[in-house]
Length: 209
Ligand SMILES: Cc1ncc(COP(=O)(O)OP(=O)(O)O)c(N)n1
Ligand SMILES: Cc1nc(C(=O)O)sc1CCOP(=O)(O)O
Ligand SMILES: [Mg+2]
Image (cartoon, rainbow, N blue to C red; front, side, top):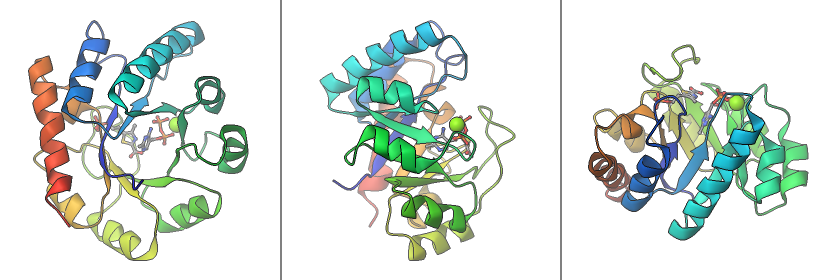
């Protein structure tokens, strides 16, 4: 199955007090991948929340991805997303098996993506394309490099960093398969608006070649 659609990413601060309600609202609108991203070192809470998300994702037939932590992903039997300093892809692939979804952060560098492809990544992620309140210091990527990456890479391409309904269209037009979003989705004022936004992100991908 080709990975294409909305890639919703959780944020423990933004979702405080409404975590499962907002995640379920997004799943209701349609989510291809859901990433559990929690940068705290509270392992017990991380396990508890990841288990809850796993159960929710199973109900909605959505694939769960764990950020940073291949061991936790292995424990749950789900995928993982690894950045450039989160450990190598090859052992993660050996740990999780050939069917697991493994994503790799490639910033704005096609060479990193080509290397990740060789090491068994399932998708590559480029960013940050716009200002991001979630991760303001992330290195920048451009639409021009995205277009070039599209011609050089066979893998699904994920875009991230300040993506919203207002700015995502050119990214899709230049080759993005997965729109990875925190604030542009979960920054909504109500569960109804989260669901509406999720549907609208999916429509952007559906009605583009
Ligand atoms: C889909 C996706 N793309 C990029 C990232 C960023 O990963 P990383 O560079 O490891 O930074 P942190 O998210 O761990 O702070 C991501 N998480 N997901
Ligand atoms: C986690 C993350 N990684 C990025 C990168 O560029 O690698 S940008 C980012 C934050 C994405 O959140 P928002 O949609 O709120 O900008
Ligand atoms: Mg990381």
